[in-house]
Amino acid sequence: MKILIAASDLTPLISTDPAGQNGPVAALPAALQRAGHEVSLVGPLTRAWADATAVKLKATGVRVNVALGSDRESVQVFETRSEEGLQIFLLKHDPIFGEMADGVSAFEGDARAAVLFSKLVIELSRRLNPAPDVVQIYDWPGALVPVFLRAQHLPFASVLSLDNPTTNGSFPIEDFGLLNLGWEYFRPNAVEFYGRVNFLKAGILHADAVVVPGELERAAVQTPEHGGGLDAVFREQSSKLHGIPAGVDENVWNPARDPFVARRYQSSNLGGKAACRGALLAHLGLDKNPAGPVYLVDLAAGQDAHYLDLLASMLDQLLADDVRLVVLGEFPADLPAAITFQVAARKYPGHLALVRAGDERLAHVALAGANFQLFLGRTLRLSEFILRSLKYGTVPVVPAGAGVRQLLTDHQPGVEGGNGLVFYRPNGEALFDALAHRAAGLLRPADDWESLQQQAMIQAAKFTWARTAAQFVALYQRLRP
Image (tube, rainbow, N blue to C red; front, side, top):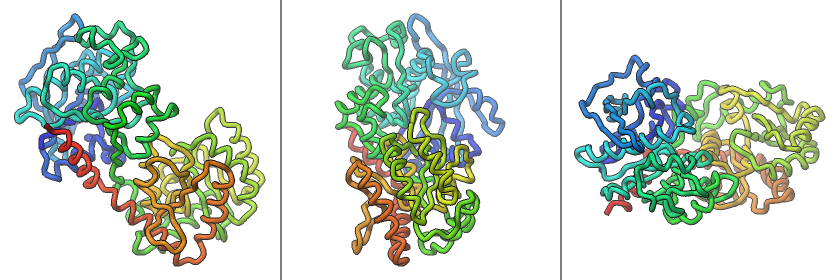
């Protein structure tokens, strides 16, 4: 199968940061290629590409001319290869792309750049031989690609992949002329959205499929809190909305070779997990050797204010027992419960640690050292954080809801296969029961606790990039005529 992947930011392919290299724009194409598919990528030739001394750019001799409103823009196409041998096309247009910073945010407020990029992806797809079976686009800067595919009746399936719809390319009506489409497209069933042009909305409506990074995220984008104003559009188009989790970043998040943890471990030998727990408590100055569990709350994973309020209301009751609670990150500025946490940290200095500014090392040390990680909300990166937690044998505690079962099976005493704790009512009693009774009781007997940790790690091992690629291929095949 021939697949063309378009992204406004391809710099993870030249990044020396393993975390960047294992993001979806870099890892998925490589996994698809390893599975035997022909994959090409296309993106703008930004300053980072031009400055990368290790990158060998070759002029293809192809120059593309496209209309951009009343103007015509001429763009050169360059080619290079990634370390994995992936074919990469880079679009050189210095006035718009040449000094552009990297990342989706570089396109923010720049309708000309996004329209030009989408039109160039279309022109490249028409010139490729063999022609692509599927054109996959990442995020809003290329979201007009499905619109132009439909308008030009091109026979390519389109897949729109989204990480974060809260920025969605909303522009005034004056920018509609850049599209060079008839006014029949400035309607609610096309690009118009409350009197403005909305690129992401148009892409959602015209793409053959829309993919978000997990079923949890699929549910989240259909809510006002996480839909970026397009939650009603996501709900209306839910039949084409798919949740495919990204693979676990083995080079970054892997307790068997993590350079930051006190002692490495794996599911078949969990001895190092206890050493990591001791190292975490010592690093934060918490009382050592608690009889109860060590809980982790990472605010970067996203937590609903409702559940943080519930947790704050039970701190005295929870911390009076021999447990430890570690909270990483900054509380939301408008969260009244933040004061309650600060008071509790002074009242229980050996039991509660609030770490506002952490670093990469602490994130790994905390994940390896905690027994449980609390996920008290729905965010657009929740699947990623839960899979990391499972990978480290740090049992997730989550409220029930749509999408949870894709990643977790609730632990039930005497029943094999559970890998997390799920509470089923959104109130303080259910949360307290999960923490003070169910979680605390799991540490005794030790055999059952070790089995639960192993099940968590076994579950995480299933979520590889090979599996992710296979799920995308299955989707592509369903979309092909």
